[in-house]
Structures are given as structure tokens and as C-alpha cells.
Length: 286
Image 1: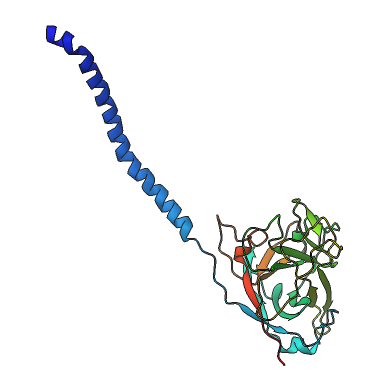
Image 2: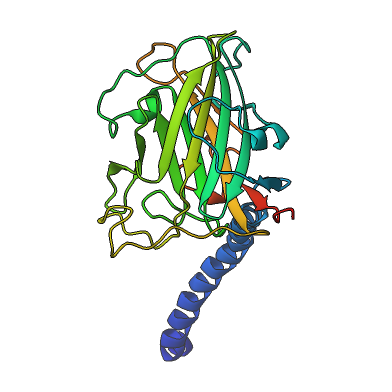
């Protein structure tokens, strides 16, 4: 007893230390599993990559294209068609309900787009061009002037132009509000005389850089100028069509390029330019 009294403080400290050793041992057993789980998750995210698309070569237009909705210009006849056939939102649909394809051309001051759409119903339910424009029949033009990719929902790192049936052009501004960019795109559409369900949609697009100031009009003296296009220039590009036959919201959203789903969502083009494809402007032919 005398020995115990002499050494009691030491024994108490030893017992306390042993308790913590036991807790530490349990932690050492748990931590590897925790970090292993974390490591697998991080590695999986690191391995996520977008689809790699073959660049589309875009011919030079020898003459200025007449934007009248009638694709009879000689240069259109030498441009290649590209499909709009990747379902982003909605179930598969019959080709008579929707089918689409497009062509591109360029001149120094303009990127030209011709979209051919077969749509059995053209529908525009909202008069205000900045309200629910994605729920109307709309051609959506995604454009990234310097092909840099990245987030762009509320910046002009890239544009997601929604071109409506009434020729209004809408996208989000840097103030996180929808606004029109009608000066960026001149557009006219017309029905095919032989097949009225076939619509030709011609556009002349001014390509603006990412420092575009949306508090000014497009051609304000203090506004940044549209980019002068040249051969071998690479741009981020994607095209899509919002199809609605009369529902409260769009029924289908069909794109020119496949998009990987994130948490089940493939509708990522309006905010992430990494899902775009690329176009390369070919040199002028002498």
C-alpha cells in the first residue's frame, strides 16, 4: 500500500495515456478507409473529361451573303451540311416532328449560319423576348470567340444566343439578367415552297470578344469592336434547337454536339463552353 501511494500519480497518468492510445489506434483504423474513399472520389472527378469533337472546317464566302431566308447564294452550294441530332432534353422524336442541319461560311466581318429545320409546329408563346425564351421554338447559337472554354452563364467568355421566330436575340448579361443582343445577329427565316414544314434560317453574326460591355449598345463609340475574322482562326461553336409544339415548357432540346451528363443533366451549354465543339476558318482561295 505504501508503494501504491508513492506511485499513484504515475499510475493515473499511465491509465490516461493508455486510454488515448486506444482512441488513437481506433482512429488509425478508420482514417485509411476515409482517405481511400476521398481519394477515389477526387480521382473520379479528375478523370472526367468532355467529349473531344472533330473541328469543323468553315469555307470562306467569296461574296457577301444576302440574308433573306432563301439559301440560293452560290457560296452556300459549296458548304457542307452538319447534323443537329443529339437529344439534350426530351425523348426521341419522329423526324417529321423535328430534323435539322446547318452550314457555316465566313467573311472578315461576319460568320454566316444557315439552319434548315423541319418542324411540324412553330410556336412562340411569350411576347417578351427576355422571358422564358428557351420554351419557344428557338435556334440557339453558342459561340466562344477565342475557343477558351470555361464558365460563361453570366459573362461573355462565350455567348449563348437564343434566336427567336420574331428575330429577337436573347442571352444573359453580366448583371445576371436576360437581355437582347439584336445587333449581334441579323436573321431572316422563310418556309420552303415545296415543303412548308421545312424552314430555312439565315444568320449573319458579328463575333464579339469576351470583354464586350453589355451596358453599352453593340456599336457605341466606347464599345469593343467585333473581331475581324481571318483564315486558320479557331472558335468554340455549338448549335441547338428548342422545339415546342404547344406545351407550357419546351418538349425537346436537340444539339449539334453530344454532351456528357453531370448529375443526369446534359443541358450545360448555356453556362459551360467546355462542351462546345470547334470550328476552324479555312484560308481564302485565290
